Amino acid sequence: MIDEIKKKVKYNQQCPYIATICRHMLDFDFEKLCSVTLSNLNVYVCLICGKYYQGKSINTQAYIHSLEQDHHLFMNLQNTKIYCLPDNYEVVDHSLEDIQYNLDPKFNNLKELDDNVEESRALDGTTFLPGFVGLNNLSKSDYFNVVMQALCRIKPLRNFMIFLQFQKSATEPFDYNCLLSQRFSELTRKIWNPRNYKGHVSPHELLQAVTLKSNKQFKIGQQSDPMHLIIWFLDNLKKELLHINKTNTIISDCFQGELQYEWYKPLKNAIGYQPIPIIEQKSFFYLSLDLPSTPLQKDGSQKALIPSISIQELIKKYDGFTNTDSADGRRRYTITKFPKYLIIHMKRFIKNNFFMEKNPTIVTFPLNDLDLSQCLNLEQQNVKYNLIANICHEGTAKVGIYKIHVKNEANNQWFQIQDLHKQNICK
Image (cartoon, rainbow, N blue to C red; front, side):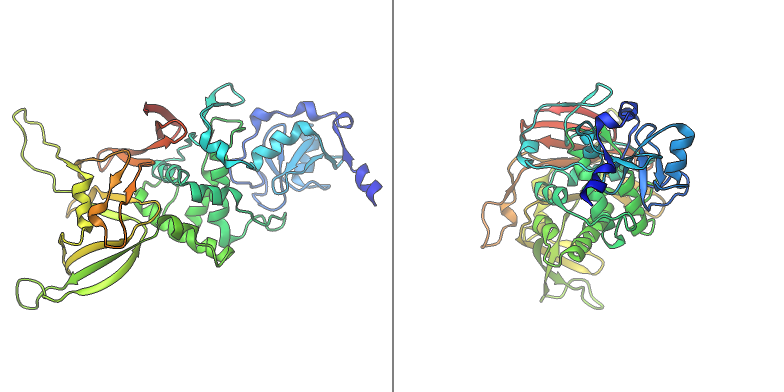
């Protein structure tokens, strides 16, 4: 039996077609469907032209392609095994390992990723820094790109997704119940891949998965709010990871905090609020801050004034004393447990009776040691946060783009990334 298996495997000196491989034609970022049948079952990539075809036995699409185009080397997109068609023997050679690695990157020492300041070189000669690469805009998907860039900065989440394992087979390439986590794991590994053939990555497969699982709430060609995506994505990713392992708490461990609020309901048939509040506990994954109203007056040069406020002023919403009024009453918030990673959202877009408008208020904040001691209860002390990512919107409420600022903690270098464009901004 062993001898029969060995006969089906040919090495470099026995396969004359290895030299025909065109690495610059290979792109593993797109949905892995046969280019003819559109099936995702038992799909192979042609290592000469980069197209996807189904099967490798007689009369399959890959087999026919090998005869018609004289392309002979194909790699299975599930198990990374490489075959020569139409002879149908497996080819094993160390020179092919880089191709298999780029399809399914593996990592051993994550500390090297965090300490790295050296750029890698793509096949076209361009350089890139692993972990800080651009993402393709798939038509109005800039909001999606900045969210994925931000989540890839969360080290515990990144490390977990890099090592997350899924069972793969030719007949069942993915489990719908784990689709988001599988695609996010793949994208995370590609973003941090130091041996990538390109200096950028396409999030096509993950966005397709998000479109499918959100019932087209988020989809290609439709702009959306990054905060809406973060809320939906973390909630659904948490559900999927619990489906994989009921004891998994990585999302809660990273982002979940606790707060207490006093709710004073309005008086009936009178102005004011009830004197005795309803006290409730609530978990949160982000804090929403209210920006002050934009002033209508102009300065002497007839230019509209753009107000400025510090984040310390806005965060007073959660100090336990500041009132937050709404149609259903008055609330006072106190944070009882801070998360390890704090997501803060500034509500800039407000829809009035006629159109959506953007609040241009400038919010100032420190890059390091954001002190939230004013929101502490007696059980916690000295809670400070360092900024690792900042998503911002440039433009008007009707026409604008999202970009992100991210920090390389190895040398404190900040980058601004907008889709495929990356530039150094400060250090």
